[in-house]
Image (tube, rainbow, N blue to C red; front, side, top):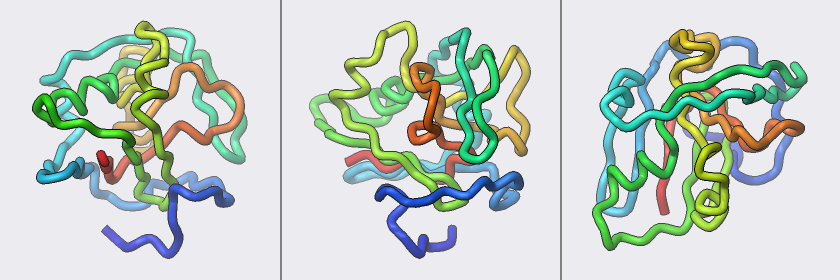
Length: 159
């Protein structure tokens, strides 16, 4: 993965990027004391949820939807990787195109249990294509600014 020339977690302009940043479809999850590489198919072994009435909010492309997304709640992935009683406070989800978002544990826990932040791998009962992200972070409660949705996930850092 190429190093970022800016901090993707600090506010910055995010120009629309219609093409995948790379052909690589894997992503890395890094946490204190560990690291694992995931392919989209690896998520199929974890408990999934399906959430209707979600929107894709894209910089430069506006809002589209509603869609029904299926995937693994971000908290489920973290719980799967971090054995209790390891505590964490934040998770950064970074795109291969240099965009990223930082989510805090208290924010994720405060989301409605029926609409969690989701590592989506299917849209309307079809697998996401590479163009759509293959795996993308969907925050089902976001409808207006694209700051908490990440397409083309390349890395998830748990701290």
